[in-house]
Image 1 (cartoon, rainbow over the protein chains, first blue to last red):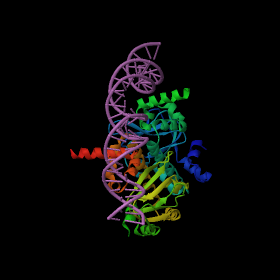
Image 2 (cartoon, each protein chain N blue to C red; image 1 turned 30 degrees about the vertical axis):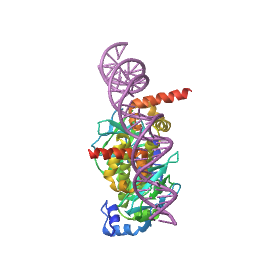
Image 3 (cartoon, helix red, strand yellow; image 1 turned 30 degrees about the horizontal axis):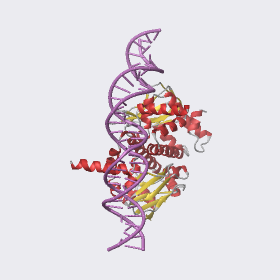
Image 4 (cartoon, rainbow over the protein chains, first blue to last red; image 1 turned 90 degrees about the vertical axis):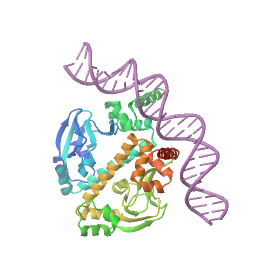
Length: 194
Length: 194
DNA sequence: CTCAATTCTTACCATATGGCAAGAAATCAC
DNA sequence: GTGATTTCTTGCCATATGGTAAGAATTGAG
């Protein structure tokens, strides 16, 4: 029994034999720091359950700048839903920020589980609902919270990202420049001293 | 055959008898301008296929201000995914901006379709993937585009919203104040004159 | 139709963040 | 270990947007 897969697929009442079927549909895969899970224009044909490592996704805006759209850590699913399920070329890039150890499952195997394992589609819907909720919360936070608040929230929820990621990647995720984030960090550090 | 339902449920190859089963699971409902589809704290127990009218969803931020999180128009699904599928009280409010004519389907009927109608769960996954994609694009737009660009994009995609909606609702959706949006409108009008 | 309530515009100034550029610090390749 | 590259910080000033408030325009209730 693998712990990462058990965490990811824990949501509904799968039997242990069903869990075994699910687990066996995954294949252990390793990516080196800098390797790409997915590149713009490709068709996503699998997703990855991340056992260790740190990953980011990014899009290229009209001025040619990379905008970080998400981070993925341990026990999270590295996936580009739109490309995988709408069967359309992706506009995102997904890159390993550190060496990664993950469990890959391809689209066909996933579809088989979807059809055959009782409750799997329910698990999938629940996962996707959660993903949608998180994305909406992110939009709302962009409107409601200051850059400083967004930074502190990210630090609280994912301290490992702050520690291991170049500042410019974090800045574009927060919707600010690296210059501003540097200033915000300084400001926070000053306040903590007092 | 209803046109709105046909548009909404067209995505996969349903047979006409399956479509009939789906349609029959819906009930015609009318809401008056100002009526609430859903209020914060409630559990969503249905969604609505909008045949006519205009709807907005909004959240209340920590300062007590309403932030518009989305607009819904003709042939769109008025839904709060997180509450409906995660079975948890909602943090959103959904309100009719005009009189609305819609087709309501409750959670249990939906679940029945999900289990019995071939391809229905696939339709659902496709719909949800599209919803997730749109939400991500909205986040990205908040980072990449100026308020003016976001306003123009909204005007292009949903001109009916611009025409029928109080400025303050649009402003909070764009992530700016109504004062700023008023200035932006003036600026746009001036540029068009020249 | 008329008054009240709401919505929209405008002005003033404040604040957050951006653009650019230079230098410091850290990391990487060999 | 050393030089090259990348990352981070800082300063200067520009720009976009916010806060407040007052008045104009529009809408709604009776």
